[in-house]
Length: 375
Image 1: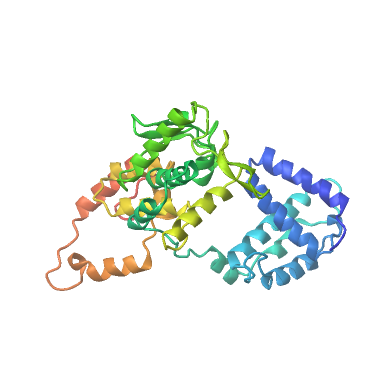
Image 2: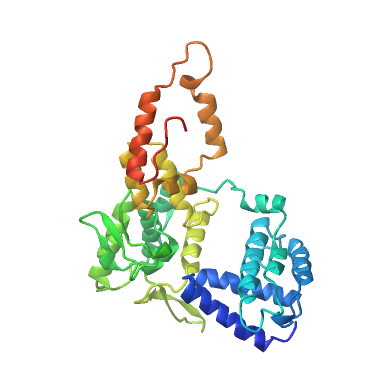
């Protein structure tokens, strides 16, 4: 392994500061950029960035195309390759404008990190997501033990995700004061809660799994009654570790703080689904699950907009495009089973006026530009 380059370390530190303070990027994005730069430096032998040449970009791109993931051992996906190269291109474009680098790096040199149009299209292509059904999540909840406080916390965590679709960052940072059981909602306050893009919004409990809300209610009452939790204490506390009889660390109850990372939450989901005899579904898949459920209901445009806002989306089209993709098997069912729209004799004609009226209502409630009748 090449010796770290001090000059490169300094300029990377400046770039990370630029991303954080000038571009407003979050730590997860900066970590991804740091990983991409580390990959490149390893391939380039930690050469000074001032010695960058387009040949290095092309050589790195060829090597990355055949690289394998450290954890999975599998060949890197086109999406991973694409994101890595995109981070590097942005870095060297920035570097070409910096004093001390302008004479050494041309803006156009960064273009050599581009994938071919074919590979870029493959990387951007949407794949079918693994999404649980409400019945599967209900099975997980009723299968989970509740003997210990950690068991009950884990069960409440999954139940809460099932009725709020809260993101992992929010689950890790929510406090008791953010939940209003009487009003049936959660205030995701970005001043405290880790929400995407720092949005503050209210999420009402969604009427999905009947067993979920009593589990959440019981957990909150237990925290206040048995553990003397206050308003500013975490809704889902981290696990307190202690030294066991054999000298090793063992779980010993609740910490009075939340989790610092999302990995413990993912581990809880992983264990719960495995114990229920089901494949693992990550916490984010619950958002897709709830949107799929909503799409099957006879909702008005106004009601669909409410479901969209519940997810923290300012635009209802975000809900449809990001989470509303119809799974291929369901797509086939809808096409083959749509007797009313078959192109056979006697099929009813579409009511164009009613269709345009429904679209107009959806557009008005979603705050998007209106579509013309000819469009």
